Image (cartoon, rainbow, N blue to C red; front, side, top):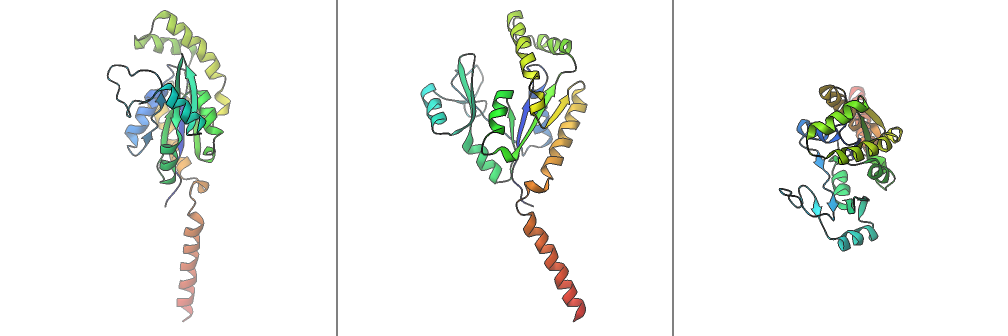
Length: 217
């Protein structure tokens, strides 16, 4: 039965595992479409335009914001990031789910948008602050100064957990993945996600009526 696609938002402080969970979810269901954000920052080595990000100029980004073509947007470390609305809306109407790996600010904007009815928001928490810092250091990508900044930001990020529909504590990644898949499957089956459900039930009732008429004849 045709349903409206979900806008699945995954948020967490850096290091809590939202990117890993996003990759696992897409491996579980390849039909999921990952939302490609637009950004004004320059491409990093190996990044592909239209795959990793939609790289654009500041002027074009500002035009899209002014024209209300962005579902959400924010400035991060001097660069602008945002989600073009058109592709997400088209996927939703076709019954395809879109996955968002965004922070609480982006999630808040999406939940307040015209597509809010179809949002499923999930916040991922670390099992402890010590574990969060250990994961950041294990990446081997950031300096001590950057890690300190990310840890400072993590407290603010975590304070927004109650704004989300679901919360998963990512202590065991395999268990967290199973919880995530259970949530998605349940939300897909909600009656209010299926605009054609009334017509389907009417069809069932007509079948009952036809059987009754046949039994009397």
